[in-house]
Image (cartoon, rainbow, N blue to C red; front, top):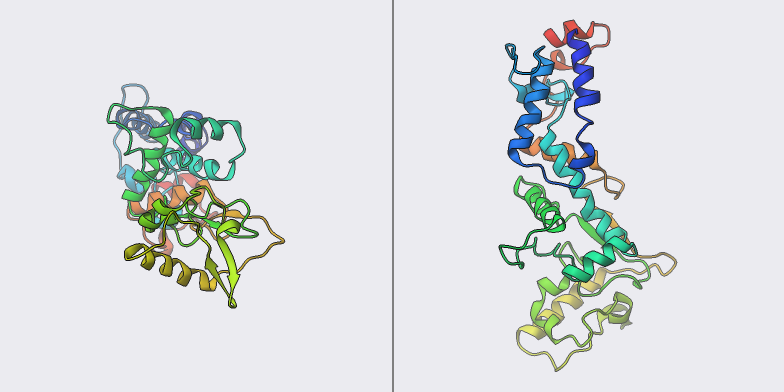
Length: 286
């Protein structure tokens, strides 16, 4: 096969075969290395145990067109991006049966706030592996686990303490002392925010009168509520801050992980960009 044919084979077939498994399981490094080896051998014209000379580093070949590569992408980045979608689905599909099952086993947050760290070291499951993978995305320099924020409409479906709606972190974590005093820790925003003296203030029902640090935490929450606005005609919804339209996109996450992992910058120079007037085999060779 020509270079162009092998590029099509790798991009359309070998990249797609593991997608189903990548969507559910975090691939082991040895598996990823084997799959990358198969892609690399096929692209350079090898097969089976036969390898041919690699004229360009594989990390450069798989880069996006804009960075001088052939846009084949990284299997590891694709795997992590596909698993990351479960974080979005867990938040947005709260009425689904599978979400209810996860919550019944791991609690209301599904260990998304702890990364599974509160479980014993011997604990292992498909869901905890998914959660831990999402936290690994943070480690490459993407604030993924804090990128999903609750936007307030009427406040009926958002937990005052346990959902990230005032900033990227739930109030139960930022103001843990005050949270421990809360009588109803599952209270909704509409139950705990009232309009008073031309501003929204917290109407938390506490076990005792706050003092010291807890009083300071209550004042801090009230200050954050000053700029809050309610639109009672709309329902509460989730927003993904890493995309322009607020909706989760696997491709955007995949590109972000790749850019951080392989340190791809912006467009390099015009010579590396695709030119449809040049035969693909010549373009790849150049």
